[in-house]
Length: 180
Image (tube, rainbow, N blue to C red; front, side, top):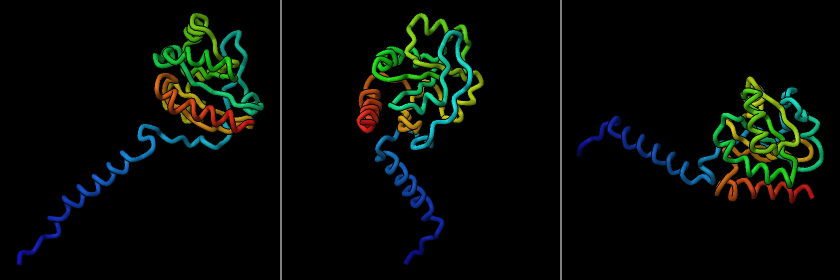
């Protein structure tokens, strides 16, 4: 009877382990999402700077009663421009706060004056330090925050199309229902 060398088993075992990893990854609920460490935690501080003539976003505003959104955006960000009409519509229903990320002040002001300003209050993050604290990977990112300042949900990407309808809106509706 022929004997199988132990090293001959290594390639099939490695393949089986790789196949199992891929299978697990494909069967996750949302394989495209990156979990946020902020969910269930108090919202980090926001920068103490804003754009000229705009209301300064403060940490106290994030802890006021009611559900609110915090949107990290920039005028140089094409997806931010795409989601802007959605933010304008949402701002008619609940407070939407903005954090302008690594932007030129004049460009941000021009963007808001040309396309409308959905933000009840703004902060600017010219060096991206607050974005790091919030776990933002790239704008746009939107956080749902409850009445005591707890981050309930993080949405990475523009608030448009099917992702907005199937992932973001159900979380927002759940947060609004839970506040009652």
